[in-house]
Image: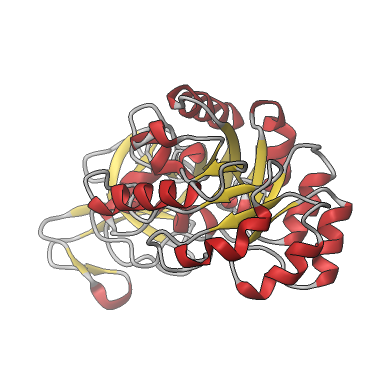
Length: 344
């Protein structure tokens, strides 16, 4: 190799194991894999090719994502934020796609295509982003059909003690009284873990499949790594990196790693963020730059140039990185850039 480059690999056996665990929690219901944003950075196409036999359907946001999946799968595909013109509905009908409707502007087209494709009717139960209001139920009664699905989205499922969860479930069940024929779906990843009793007919699982929520049974499926390209000594009182953020309180040995925010590592990562070099834990010191990360290897005398530094992996959970830096794992997964070498 002429020059070292950051590398990203995805372990689909880990994703399969994560899915199997999540499905074991369910009391009922089909498992919809949410693979928007290129499967949260894990490769939409590779996900479908590797895992189509263990999921029951797919959820995406963009029409082009749905069409890419349809080339490799006959399973249900949901456009979770809907479509908004006749051409889009025609394409969905031709390719047997399901469409979410959540806004009055979609109703005329939805009624026209009600018998031609499956519609997911989204109600706002507290998230206050997309969805019809409870008072709109009577206007939507024509969609109370077996082929369709009633849906909503939980706002605080990652905090099971938040009373908003119970309020949303209660409101969803009230709306369900007017939609007694349709399927039902309200659980996301955190909902599956904390409220499996509300699994109903479909669950919509995203981040948990990839190991992006703290849980002892779920593992990070990505390994993001690059090489140490320099080792230098830092004397007591010297500073390192842009802004000289870190000042050495004692003599230090520093590894310089060929990766930075242009590769997708968070620029605002704090001193103390954990990485692994040769499976040994060490900490970032100094500001992450466009191309370089600096880490403290003072207690690791055997580190040498050319060794691999693992930024997150099954052994160094992405959740440790995100939580320490007050970020979310979604952001880390989806910000890996095209200059990183990717493999499965």
